[in-house]
Image (tube, rainbow, N blue to C red; front, side, top):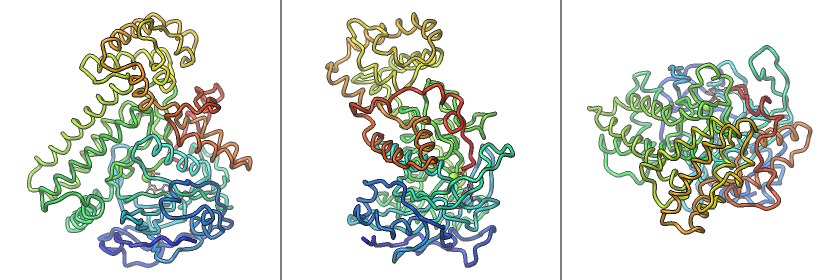
Amino acid sequence: MHLPSFDNRFLRSLPGDPEPRNFIRQVRAALWSAVAPAPVAAPRLLAHSQEMAAELGFSEADVSSPEFARVFAGNALLPGMQPFASNYGGHQFGHWAGQLGDGRAISLGEAVLADGQRRELQLKGAGPTPYSRSADGRAVLRSSIREFLCSEAMHHLGIPTTRALSLVGTGEGVVRDMFYDGHPEVEPGAIVCRVAPSFLRFGHFELPSQRGDTSLLQALADFCIARDFPHLRGRGEPLYADWFAEVCERTARLVAGWMRVGFVHGVLNTDNMSILGLAIDYGPYGWIDAYDPDWTPNTTDATGRRYRFGWQPRVANWNLGQLARALAPLFTDAAPLQAGLDRFGAAFAAADRDDTARKLGLAECGDADVALLRDLHGLLHAHEVDMTLWFRALADIDPRAPSLAPLEHAFYDAGKRTAGEAGLNDWLARYAARVREDALSVDGRRARMHAANPKFVLRNWLAQEAIDRAHAGDMAGIGELLAVMRRPYEEQPGNERFAGKRPDWAKDRAGCSMLSCSS
Ligand code: AMP
Ligand code: MG
């Protein structure tokens, strides 16, 4: 088997926990604890990402070897791997939660690619760590399938994300009470190997800061800049300021990407915010079917719906505000941090305008176009129209004779469609007039729209179908879905089923419209 070379710079450069034993505790003055994955009964590779395997140098023969399944189940280590769990805190649902840490994620080390780039490999569900608090360190198959598929789907949509190399079944049961309502069940367990240049989160900086450990905070900031932002130059406060501004900008682009494709993260706590601006921690996420800015898939958040679709930009901004507070001890003056937060607003607005132009197929976005899209969103919401289907089919509108005909398949409710007909036709007339005066050619407009409005997204019911099949012993659905999600902007004749709107069975089905943090 190909052996990646490892250079575990995080462990080498930053203080670790001196306690070698694995028990639940508060870990101070250290950013990581050495901990080995707990072996599982019967590792079996259920799916893998060909692109990730290739990037890491694994051949398809390597991937199908029993050793690969053993390594990515946590039953064996490759030479150079040094497993550890990292220490972070976070604000959960708006409140400081103290130390959290990698409760069920165990990093194996930093693989160094041929071009010198780094890829940290991390097993999710590999057993207890000092940060597991009251939980078991394991993950169930349904959640692992969702994390595996969405990591790769997000990447292929062109949105920055942690990746997934492998999905391995453990052959062991895991007990979960899916809706915390006193109905625990034994479910099959699984482990995803996630991959990212860095798994540092906002919460990694918040914890030492909250504890008043400024020297640890500074050591971590210096490390993060050197390893994860090597293009940044300078030193001291100006360097920290540039770094924070870049984190703000990346976060803005990430969230704009989610708003463009209709993704709802579901748990945007600060411990789930990547310092690299990657989508991270795929738990009770969901994809918008009928357009609804107030929708959240996360039942754990059902009352306040803090993490609803339409609030994601402001929540990201709030989270960056927490990061700014955490970094304040590195600054003598708050102005550079405020400048970074302003950068978030500007970068989000710029990305959002760009996406408006692309989604509507316009050469550029003017102020009136922002209003045009806002009005459309109101109509889609009021009349229960599928977001993905609508925008994809909008490219088929004839600007000289606009009509709802190409869009009929995007409606969920005949009554709401009838009620919305006049308003939507008015909107289409406005839109057609705008398109007629735009500089783009017919083909140019269509290509621009198709590159921004995916045909295929990982709809909740599609993932659930793959999960149902997997629970029945048929793992092929996972690979079939991944194959479609690798080319989300292409037409893919024969795969229309995967672009279909939510079937009725999925409307109120657990796993489709209702998910919890129990995973
Ligand atoms: P999440 O809501 O998944 O982002 O997790 C929040 C915190 O709970 C993190 O510190 C996780 O590592 C931890 N956690 C979640 N599930 C488990 C589990 N099954 N075992 C141990 N820790 C967990
Ligand atoms: Mg998390």
